[in-house]
Length: 332
Image 1 (cartoon, rainbow, N blue to C red):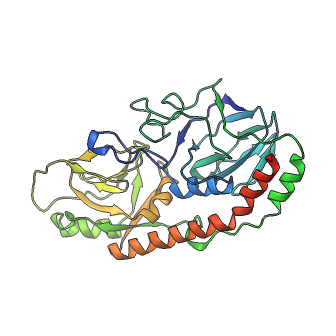
Image 2 (cartoon, helix red, strand yellow):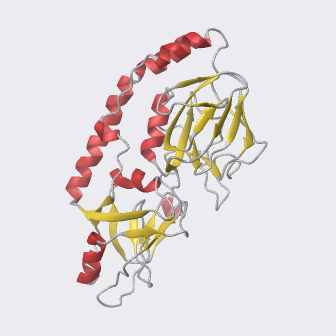
Image 3 (cartoon, rainbow, N blue to C red):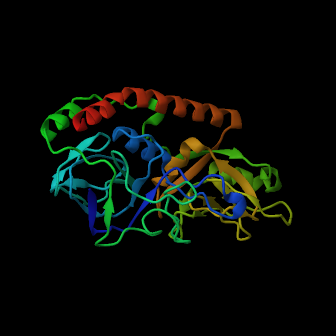
C-alpha cells in the first residue's frame, strides 16, 4: 500500500487546504497554491476536497505504486506518462501494481496536483497535513519528497477485475462547469485595500494599467513583481497587521509582493490591494518570468465570483458521485 519515490522532481510536497485557525500563534496557514486544481483532483479521485494532494512543481517526480489504486492528476500539464504512455489528466485513472508515473517536458502551468482515492497516510499537525518546509512541519516528515521515500496510502483497490473498473470510470463523462474551467487571463482581478488611497495617483494608475513581471526571486511564500515603482503619497509608519493569501504589499523599494500560500502571518508593509480569491489559482500556475496585469473590481463582484465557484464545486461533486460508488462497489 505504498508509493515509492524513484526521482523526487524539483519540489513535490503534500498540501491540503491549510492549517487554519492558528495565525494568532504565529503559525502560517500554508496549504495548496492552486485550490481549484487541488479540489478538482480530489473530487475526480472520489475524495472529499480536504484530503492532501501531492503538489508537483515544474519538474515532476517518478513514482512507483506497489498496489492498485485510483488517482487523478490536475493543474499544470507537465507531460505526465504512465509506464511510458501519455496519461490523461482531469479524470480518474486506475493504477496497477508496479505502474510507474513519470513526467516529461512542461507544456503549460507550474503546479500539478496528484490525488489518490482515500488519501495518503500522513500525520496531521494542528489539524492539517500541509507541509511547511521552513519550519519542518506537517506533510511527509516536514519536507519535500526525496529519492527512496516510501509513502503509504489508505485505500488500495482490490486486485480483481481492475480492467472492468477502469472501463467503468473511463465511461463517465466529465464536464467542468464554466466557473471551474482553467481560464487563461492576462489580468488578475484585485480589490482595493483600505490603504489604496495612501498611494500616489500615478501609482494607483500604474497598478491598474501596467504589466508586471514575476521575479526569479519568487516562491510559495510570495511573488516579487518587477515593474513600475509604487509609491506612497507621504511617508507613514504602520503597525504590523494580519495578511491573507493574495495580499499585495509594497516595500520601501516600490516593487510589490503578492503574498502566496506560505505567507507569514502578519506584515508591516503598506497594502495596496488584494487579489480576488477566484484568480489566485491563475497566479499559482504562473512562475518566474511570466507577466501579469491587474483589473480593479468591487468587493461585491469578487464575492459573487466566489459564490459561483463554490456552487460549481457542489454541482461537480454530485456529478462525480458515480466515481465514488464504482470504486466502493469494486472493493466490496
